[in-house]
Image (tube, rainbow, N blue to C red):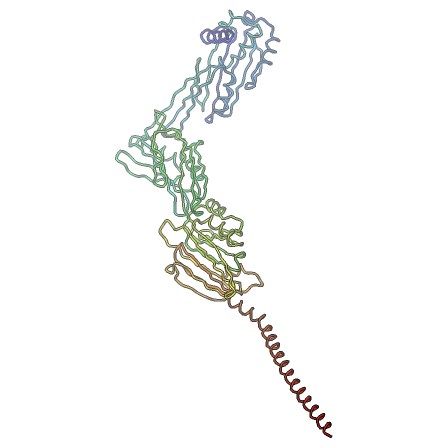
Length: 573
């Protein structure tokens, strides 16, 4: 602890006192993006340095080589009895510079950099809370710890001559900490950023700059040049004009990219993510994040009033320079028409194709998110076809219970179920109920659709109905397959019965009743007829047997009587 206090005391002395042992000069060459080089030259006077430095030139070379921080590179030269060591601090950005400076100092650096070249903000602000002498503390520490200098010589060792800053052709000079503030501001009243979701799903944005008349009088030409290449309109106000820049984009990231160009900023960007609602796969919840950088429009207080709205909802209104914005919105893809084609075989084998047609009102990316929601054990062949007029379709195959599980997960309040019971009098009876609950359109448009039901079970007589009756606008019964149905039936199957219901509405319930009574009795007759014939033949044979027995009895009786009569005649003789 005492050693640290002692070192800080020495550093404080170095800041206040100048000697002639080491002359230190510094040059900073800076670019707009804060890339550049800081060069620090230390010249050791052979005449004066040996009075402070207890060692040879070789000792000094070795000490610098072993102690030089990684952030620096250096070269050495000798001239007129003086030895000069030039140290280079190269940096690619402000963050890179801060990191390397932090590694050289014994305290946290504070660096302020602002550059403006807009019609509203122009000039340079560049401030630091350290000097080049602070950046060379590592060398003094190495000299002291190597016992090449002592406490008494510390105040006379360093002499910081000057620091020269070169920026875009202008040179600034200071002997102490860098402190440049030559920023000029031109009045700008406020900025409005308004975004709307178009019917097509694209995003449209208007950025408005409220300009006082004084600013227009002074900088109208520069302002027009600054925003050249944009779609610009002007609106009159009570004290000046509003410059409006309009543009649109397919998605929020592209919109933010165009915003970055308008704001002449490298730090403005936007991202978004979409997730589907659990209640409606066609409704998307969208999470937006946008970073705004208004550095080229700020006023002397380093802020500018900004109002930000999205779909007519104000997200914030505040004076800012930079701001991170997060908000959510939702968008629903309306459905124009639908077609549900169901093929019934048994409760263990049901097939259906569901198709939704609509005019695209969301982006291609959002459509792909919607498509991914249509998944499940029984769902297959999910397709998305079309450009502006789009059809989303999928196929279901499986048992009634499995198909119901997947379909009701997509469309809550939908229910598919079947029951069967058997009686000796009526055979097997099957009921199938398909309750469909599709999302209603938020724009108030009614859904129009078709429900096509086909049975390939030839053993069942069919009764089909759709409720409520008021939504059924037309019903067609036929035995020929439609295109949607034909893709679902197998090559060895035939359409037994088909109904095509034309509907208006998003809620319906189809009920199917299948009965095997006719086939049951036909089957029964097929096996009962031979039995009946056998019984008849048996009865016939039994009756014939009795008749034959009676005939032989009568014959026997007649023979006995004849024999007895013959015996009596013989005895009488």
